[in-house]
Structures are given as structure tokens and as C-alpha cells.
Amino acid sequence: MGFMSTPPVAAFQIYPALDVRDGRVVRLAQGDYARETRYGDDPLALAQAYAAAGARWLHLVDLDAARAGGYTLAPLLSRIKADTGLSVQTGGGIRCEQDVERLLAIGADRVVVGSLSVNDPGRVAAWLASYGNDKLTVALDARCAADGRWFPATHGWTRQGRSTLSELVRLYARSNLRHLLCTDISRDGMLSGPNLQLYALLRQWAPQVALQASGGARDVGDVRGAREAGCAGLVLGKSLLEGRISLREALAC
Image 1 (cartoon, one colour):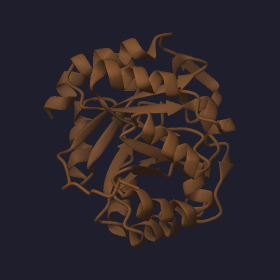
Image 2 (cartoon, one colour; image 1 turned 180 degrees about the vertical axis):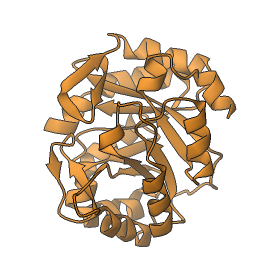
Image 3 (cartoon, helix red, strand yellow; image 1 turned 45 degrees about the vertical axis):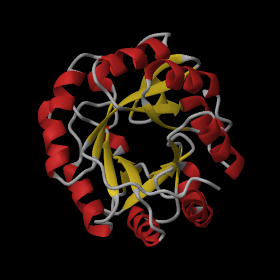
Image 4 (tube, helix red, strand yellow; image 1 turned 60 degrees about the vertical axis):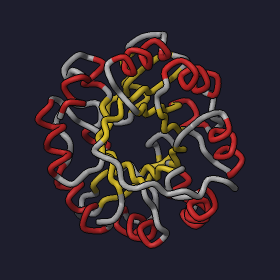
């Protein structure tokens, strides 16, 4: 299908995040749609500002589609690609192969697959083989159960998957997964620091996978911590939007 190249592992990346709901840039506290904070009505302008600050990548999330399906940000994605030169990984509501093909066709550099990665890992593993493992990012966002096991959440973090996080990560590692994004939902949007213990577990389960940390980053120390923990990148959302971290300073780390 023309997407089979696999480039060498790149340097540690910072991924500024734009979570979009009803056309606005927002953040949800711990994945709760009822606990939304709005940060502006112009996601394109924010993407342009991130590019001007030196960002190379953008993490773009369609929160409406994450819960209901049907990716809605195609026009925004096209504008970001045309106006900023940023590489973009994006997702929300990816339910079928046509969704993947559509996003790649309009310029997505990687398609982020969340709920389907949990509910139908066999199909997503087949996409890794078909499109090449540099064209997909598997997002396994998780909560820790009372027994200490981690379980992924789906449908905008409103449902829990049946398999454990460990089982899924190992399955995808056997399927030649390259890019894994994992969020500790309890820390997302809370500015409580990334869960480095979780990322240490993930590195044990799949040492060859390029791991993107997400959730809780507060300052440059957290950027360094994620890098020193062996992560390949870090998604920054609320800390950038509230000015707690300078993007230029984070990139310099």
C-alpha cells in the first residue's frame, strides 16, 4: 500500500497536544468529559505557535470522535499540515481501515488508534503489517485496578477493556509495534507528574517499542525524568496551555 518504510529510531520527541472538542482546545481532568477546561477557540493558531517555538510534532485528538466515533478534524488537520510544516499524529474515533486510509491521505503522519487497539487487537496488528509500523501509534490509556493490575480504557475513557495492559502490550510487541502511547488516566490533566513506575513496567514488557509518555507532566524536570526512564517521547498538554512549561525549554532538554 505504499506505507512500508521503517526509519531508524529518532531522538527523544516532545509532542505538544491539542485536544479538540466542539472546535475548541480543551483539557479533560482524568478523562472526564464533565470536567472540561477550555483554552481557546482557534486550534490552528495554537499549532502555528507551537511550530514557531520549534516543535517538530503535534499530537492532535478529536475528543468528540473518541467517544462517539467518526473523525471530525479533517479540515483542521489539512490546514495544520499546509500552514505549519509540523508532523502530526492524530486520532479519535478510528474504527475501520477506511478511517486509517483517509487520515493518511489527508496528511496524517501517524494515525493514533485507541479503543479499537483494545477491542480488536488482531485487526490493528494486521494494519501494522499492511501500512508499516511507523504509520500507526497504538494508544493504550490505562487505570490501575485495586489488585494492582493495569487495564486499558476505551471510548473516550468511559469503558474498561477486558485484557490487561500487560497482555495487550506484549501482544503488540510480538506484532512489531513501533509507537506506543500510554497515559495513566488518574494523572491526566492533574499536573501531578508522569507515572514513571508505569513506564518502567512498559519498558520491561516491550523494550523494543518507542514509548510515548503522557499525563501529568508539570515542569522541565518531568521532561528529563521521562527521557531518563527510557521513553522515546513525551506528550505535553495542560502544562503548555497554562504556561507551566516553556515549549522552547522542553525542546532544549
